[in-house]
Length: 213
Image 1 (cartoon, rainbow, N blue to C red):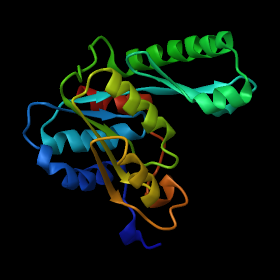
Image 2: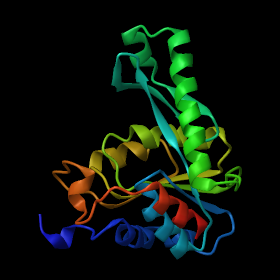
Image 3: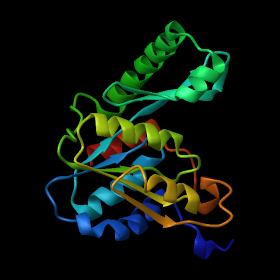
Image 4: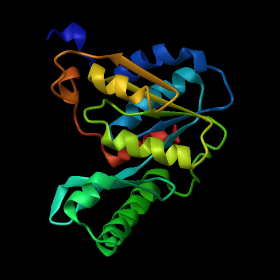
């Protein structure tokens, strides 16, 4: 791959991504939501370009006890839980175990949200266009949980927007939301980080600063 096909960093990726979202510019019913931590710098640039409010949307994976890398679901901002029924059945996880994992992850989610947002209340997405932004998609599991949670919270229109993702992943999401904007869909894709020259971890402090504007 050449440097011309890669984003210099997440902020640059956000500016490029915003070009595909300008039909939402200047509207008063749009909210941009960054999935932390990597999605927030991207979302910041999108929100700036569109003149829209920015908020963070936290999603925590629910790992199968003893096999935590296997997701049996996720819990998202607004305390919305999404379960993968196939994984739950296949692993035989009990309802009690699910509740224990969910309670633990919910506590972490609340702590993260408080750390990111402080005392400011979350932006209400009810009857609004919710643009969910991450720095890229691989399997899309985290974004899928965010979509379910946004729908549960009454968003009028849900848009998935990412700088880079596999073409087939973008196509799959078109059946789940109102609009999908993927700036580049490289083939082969390999991994999100390959399409950034600077893919350094985003700190909690950077997320806080961006949310404060």
